[in-house]
Image (tube, rainbow, N blue to C red):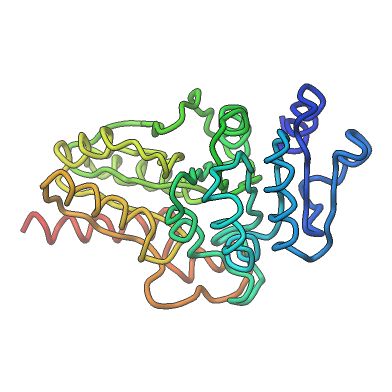
Length: 302
């Protein structure tokens, strides 16, 4: 099932759902015909769209709003914070082409701080599916919740069959004594391949799909920190405020220490290019991830 198919089915089953977009119909082209006046395109007006969504939510509706991730999270931030966040309204924010998925676009169209921005809002839930199968597995629970949420929409096809979703729980693919790879979103596929490469080299490697970043699965993170020599956070996001920060905050709260290698964007935007070229340039291919992790583990051991 695709994102659009799930959206149409859910909207037809629940008349409270209103689908909105700020002239970003790539994911929802067939929705207007399916649900008629419950589809609203506000034009390139993300702030207006979010304000309207808050008003609809106050009147018992469940708005699912769509826009390019950088413009949804940054241009409309005050409206999200004030209109949705303070009232903790059940508005569902769908951010399109976040992180590396914004291939071919310059820095203005790159959303590499959205996790940090959205998780700063009290009550806002933040989710980052690994692929479209993970996305449609997660969304029924997210859309049926009374909480506001931000989803990094990932419509890329994957090869891994994901486990059932529970809010606040990560998906554990395996636990490792040497290394645990912690990843979310699009880079899950490369992390899975990196795990295989490292295991072929005789290492014990765990992998956790951190699909729910807020609420986050604290217990799996603590278990991995206790079990593995090295934790590796992998994210197409700036270092500040993302998964690395989440892990650091949790370890400090629990008065623990751990060896953590962050693989992220640090102090720079990613260079525009086609997706595969971007990944290679930034060092996030499966082979590059495996090499960086193996090097760090060797330094840690010796």
